[in-house]
Amino acid sequence: MTLDESWLNTIKQNSKKIKLAKNAGFCYGVKRAVDTTIKLKENNPQKQVSVLGELIHNSHVISELEKLGIKTIDTIPEKGEGICIIRSHGESDDIFSKIQKSGFELVDLTCFDVKKVQKKAVELAQNNYFVIILGKKEHPEVRAIFLNAQKKAQNPDNVFVAGSIADLKKVEDKIKISKKTGVVLQTTQTKEYLFEVVEYLSSICKILNIQNTICPSTTLRQQEAKKLAEESELMIVVGSKKSANTTHLAQLLSKITKTIHIEKPDEIENFKDLISNSKNIGITAGASTPDSIINKVIKNIESIN
Ligand code: SF4
Image (cartoon, rainbow, N blue to C red):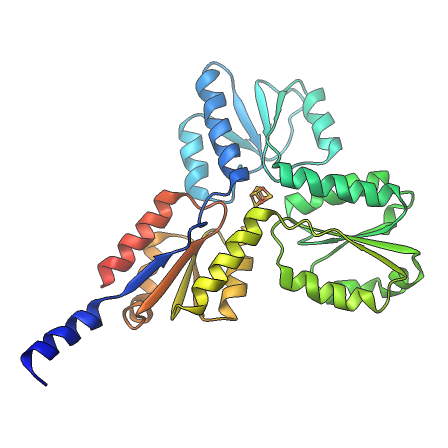
């Protein structure tokens, strides 16, 4: 090996390609919720501004909001004071009424794509479908879709949340005797899960009405991340483990390439060896991960190089 070649080799060893997915970080629904909440406090410095539940699944953003005087509340008090914000996940109609009755001034920041799912589920329930909501039962978005649809259904037992095919099998008899079955999805679900469900339901339903309500932002984020994963030795997904869209991203990508899911930039330290040994690294982030966190993750990866 000549001196020149060895020099080249070193450069190659040290040159790592780090690519950030274009649609990583805040989606339009989350951006609108965060920006509007901050503006509301700025424009109403004397008023108490509260958010019912964490505005987004990101502890860093929540503590920044707290510093600005924006409070997170878990329950609706009997007497509400100031403004109460409904986050992008949405709430059931009953919660809306409760907030208004308590005396709060209500500001609804439910994402428009979540509103669409709520509307579709209610329509199906009103038209006597056996309504299946594909998503996580305990997720606030799903809870609100479920409660609103159940309220409009002739039989409240005809609205069901399924997080897996195993869940659907529990109501197989009910589905088989139902004249019509309708399906909606939590906005952050995956196409892969939808396909699995369609295959299963097609064989047991009389009439099947599928409404693909995965939001465009989630679809784009997943498509792009999968493409990046195909050309990367390692994928790093940044975002809260409580965030549905982030965990789905990590699950999807781990089927394509080595994938790690981190919440905070300093967690990069735990994967030093893996990062040093990977030449092409792809990065993506969930819809509730701020740019500042993504940038710190990139810096920490570069420092390993
Ligand atoms: S993930 Fe989709 S539905 Fe949820 S807030 Fe973002 S854009 Fe809206």
